[in-house]
Length: 94
Picture (cartoon, rainbow, N blue to C red):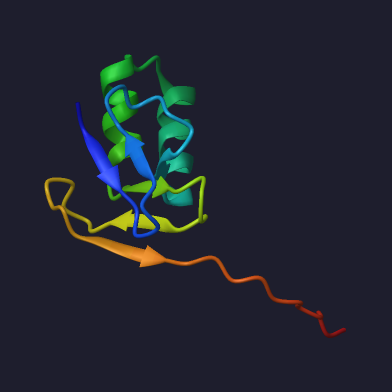
């Protein structure tokens, strides 16, 4: 069973790939080109996922401390960029 331990100690169980904290970061251009391919012709599910996966990143979200772990571009890598949640008041200028 695949697991990932967050810096806060929470253990993310990654065995099924359907957990709420197992996410994917996809470029808008990939979504748009995939939608264009679907409109032009029927594509099978394998092609759909290949197109969506191009240049995408795996993201793990810790439900305990809200850290994001973003994979490096190579999916086979165990190197992640880590982002910790900050809460700030943003005032938009007009």
